[in-house]
Image 1 (cartoon, rainbow, N blue to C red):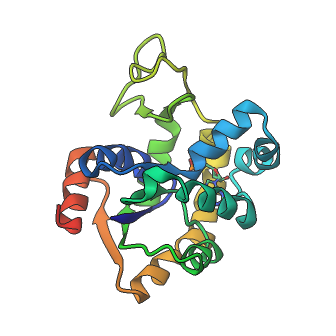
Image 2: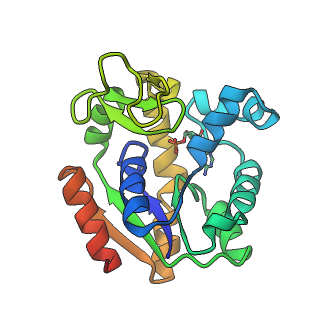
Length: 210
Ligand code: AMP
């Protein structure tokens, strides 16, 4: 099953991708996590992406498209994959389609802007494995060491209040039109994303028929 998770930043794509990955036994591919790792390691890609990311803008299409093509060509993707954070623009969705990748379903996790603002300001993330935490709904341990991998749990720079608004604007103008792209192809399912983590994953699994 080749899946795309859609939704605003903070809608819960990362959280649901972690759950789905276990249930479906296919890898999750998060362009955000790949880019953050590159920034952390100071690679050429990381240096190119850093400023865009920290100001809440999208990294240029060409960069992320080549990351995704390389990653999808790896062996572990041959039985399916879950895309978290890609595509994020119509040209990215078109490039994926043109490269011959067939998406079976695009699931949008629908969350209002007000809920997104509350969520992102409390979000924390493991810098090493990308596992998501939240100060209210999924508090990290007091020492901020990730129980899954031993990495440090941090606040992402782009989750600082001044950047959150910019990211929501980018989402509405550049990413939301992708819903129409998948709807036209009969692939879009919208699930409510404000009813808690378990209800959201149940709705997604039901929509997928698993
Ligand atoms: P995320 O973790 O998915 O919220 O991504 C964090 C940041 O990485 C975004 O705000 C963008 O700057 C960048 N990014 C991640 N995925 C993409 C993408 N598909 N296209 C462009 N920029 C991306």
